[in-house]
Structure formats: structure tokens, C-alpha cells
Image (cartoon, rainbow, N blue to C red; front, side, top):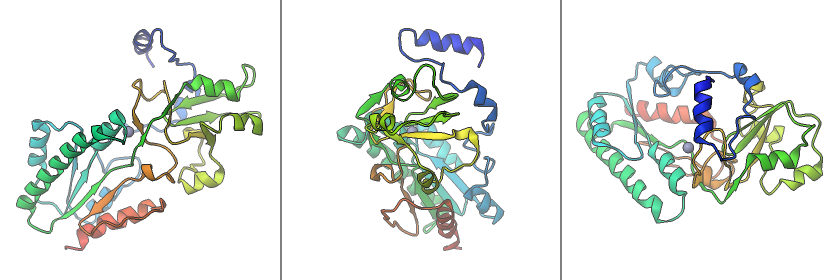
Length: 289
Ligand SMILES: [Zn+2]
């Protein structure tokens, strides 16, 4: 990180308790970086369903529904809508709205209605351009939980380690502390003292959650916060979020949604492998071919 960026951060945060000391600088070269824009859906680090569709000779369009849709963004959708086999609509604005207001109460209703109207207008236009019965999917990436407890990362560090006995490095996402070089093992007394905040995920959970990466770049151990608890400040946001995702996928509030022209099935278990999702998306096209 350049000195000028560091200076700017420190100046902006003067007087707050944000500190860069926990950024695992030594580990950063081990991280996997992608220079592709996330919107370039066929050139990500791993093949996606969009690669499969392209390989099958199927044409697709991707539309992101923003939090505060502008006329310009709406016009851009119109320009992008041309003949295709699948219209994929991501309701990205839901994430931005729910971070700002949480999931309870009237405050979320207005943004939801705005997003809904935008989706409705896109579908109306898509039907004119693509004809009735076109292939489509609408999806979010996760749900949201209302934040009830902000935790200073330093408090957790102090509860778990002493000044002399520390892990090599730790990194604070909003809902996870990633740890490298954790020695020695923590006592159950130490773990019990923080169980109201969260817990270190077991190898069994890591496998069930799909995060047993077997490579060190995502953290050798992960401390996952309980629903509603958020690290603040963290290294991913300076804002105090009112809603957050990134908790255990067992929690109902974290469920995402995927609706397709084939229908809407509500399932209460969280274990949908990506291959299920890929199949559903492809069937949404092929069913009509
Ligand atoms: Zn988010």
C-alpha cells in the first residue's frame, strides 16, 4: 500500500480506534488477485454458469438492479436488451439497501418497492424485445441480518491472546476473523469467554459451509461471529452497517433467493451446491429451446 494512501486513511481516521496493525501484510503476496472487473462474468478466476452458456452457444444478458436506479442506468439496460436465450437479473441493490437499514421495519420497504418497480419495467421491456416465454433467472447473493452488537476487534484479541502470545497475523472482515499461525491452542476457558460473540469454525463446519479451501490464503482458522454481531471498525468498511451478511448459512436470514421461469421452490436446507444452481440456470434456457 502506498504511503500516500496510508496517510489519507490515517488522517481520515484520526481519533478513531481503527488501526492497520492487524492487516496481514506478510500474507498478502499469497492472496489470489483478479484484475478482471467482476461484471466480466466469463473471465473470473473459475468458470461460471455464464461460461457454460457461452460454450453451449447460448446468448445471455446480465442486468444488475442497483439500490438507487437512475434514468441513465435504466437506459443502459434498454440498450443492452437484444435477442438472447437467457436474461439474468441480479438484485444487487437489495444488499446495499439492507446494509443501510437492516432487515426490519418500514425503512426497507421503500428500497424494495423501488427495486421491484425496476425489475418489473425490465421484464416488461424484455417481453417486448424477446417475446413471451423468454428464459430468465432473478437472483440475490444472500440474505441479511439486522446488526445488534458492534464489537471492537481489539476486544476479541485481548480476550483470546496476551501481548506475548499472539497469532502471526489476523484479518477482520465484518463477520469473520481470519487467523494465521495460531499457537498455542486456546483453552476452553478462553473460548467460553467469547462464545457470546462467536466461535472458531470446526473442520466439519468448514466442509459443510464449503470453505475448507486447504490453502492458507483465506486464513488458517476462521472465527465466525454470531448472527447480529459485527466487527466495527473492520478492514472492509468504515461505516457502521445496520444490516450484515456473512454469518452461518444455517441462519434463515442469510438465505439468498433464486427464481427462474421454471418456478420457485422454497427449501429450508442450505446445502445447494453450485452445480444445482448451474443446472437450474441452464434448464431455464434449454426448457424453451
Ligand atoms: Zn454486502
